[in-house]
Length: 374
Image (cartoon, rainbow, N blue to C red; front, side):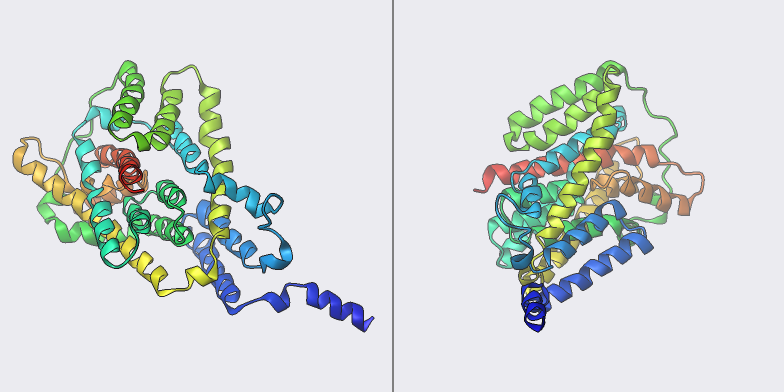
């Protein structure tokens, strides 16, 4: 009996546990706490944290990463092959109203301006010693777009993919905390009180249908590598706007999207190897990601102020901060800060323009990196 117990214990995972595994369990617990107790992106952080738990039960005894048969190995193929992020973009397009951009096309420039943070961080990350592939993967965090960050990191096979994913979603969750101080620092009280009117131009159904088709063609001819993300985003939106495919809209926006989010987040968490995660480079990734997000927010605000110099119809610079692609969180934060100055000031629908443009902008930025870096 003693021999049997000794043999059983030897085959268990206890002897294979490392201190890195134990630290990763602690990190998973912190993410779970933030998700449940603080309501910080629970739909994302809960499956990510559980993926971390599963991956750090010593895989040499569970066989969960065994090629061809291991559960996590199978699930991760959608991540490795770059399948999951475009499917999430399909869902985003299906639930997003692009009318806010079409009603005020100049907000596209605000969404583009916010991507400056991505390219500045790319240069900085490379200067700090990261390879071009890793630097591009890290820089995309500045777009506050989790699926795009994961897509670029997976295509470039960055060893920092789990850190990039967790950093991206963490900063998205922290937008209500991080953005307001930047907004107040870069704008005056008078600027924050600018009113833009409560009505936007009515956008016709024809415009809403033509936009996803034309933008797919135009963007993909200019940046071909952006097609997987932009194409699926616009397909989802076309399903929404044509009025004949309600079942497909529901499937893309709910069933497909929710299923893929679970698989994607578990896959990302399962890549959180303690030996890679618990390094100085990982801390630098988190810091650079935060810097990218701050610069992106500031770039959008400053570009809005520049637009006001040359425009008769002034825009509230706060909507520039919504140029990061966290829809609709960033737009709501812009509205909240504007309301603090004047409770009658309603800029939410105007902030949605650059917010949606930011989704397109981050996908284009990803396409630029994928096109020029090999």
